[in-house]
Image 1 (cartoon, helix red, strand yellow):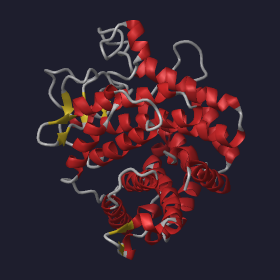
Image 2 (tube, rainbow, N blue to C red):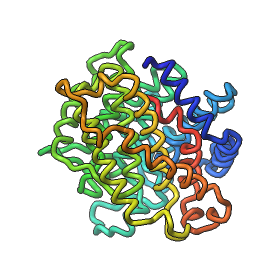
Image 3 (tube, rainbow, N blue to C red):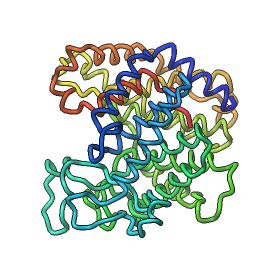
Length: 401
């Protein structure tokens, strides 16, 4: 399936399912609440939510052809780089976290990574670790950085401007250089300047996310002149090695959705001639299936809003849309999804996941209900819940590589 056909499918699916007026309203509210369209000094940036927001503005632009939505996406990219690519206002350090001089930093805003955007300053080197406090402290998360790499790649796909691709690659290089260490392991959280780990354990899906995202960027740059300094082959090889030593099943809905999103990207990369070993896709889909079964056995979707986290459930909803697209591609090009000349076990065919598709509408309807949006679990995480709901209702641009 070529890029145009793939885009048409996702747009058709998003239009069929999504309420465009609601997505537009959510993203207008998000721009106002976070200061994207506010006055000087009112901007409040957070890397995860902003990555999804960029893709939703691109989606609105793709469906309406209204340039204002594209302008918001590009403005958001600039705000993220000039806020999260620089030291905090309450930090004695100043300038770009990369250490580059002002003008050079503007040309390479992601060369030192990007801050999370947490409310509290990062933990000092001499300060003892406190797990509860760490959640509110700044630093850099690898899985947030990969989401921003993907968002920049999406901007490049829509605009054709290679500077966004270059920024994504430079971010990948900075992240890989700092988060990956000896014996094939990764840190989960690093300091703002990437000089020391803040949480030394490894995120369960970080290696897979890195492998797929690096491969996505490498594939996106195949028609560009790639200087040796912007080639990710070595990083891809190292990340593939780490992936061989990890287990993927999880009962966390956001994690399951992430696996399905990665599975969709792997399939698209296979259709482009990258990631030719389909065994990775098989492993990812089987892990998602195992995790989904475990999640459903807990019965969390029957709980009241006060005991549920919208953004985690909506991550699963987005993943289920990705699985639906993957199932269609599997049927259209089955030869790509055959290993060793034998059709794979039907239990990991995407169709095996499609019985769970009604969950998608159930999750969306639950969190569209204004009564459920009054729960503290919604209001305490309002901005991330908003952008995840918008992305679930119309995920076309987010799901494309």
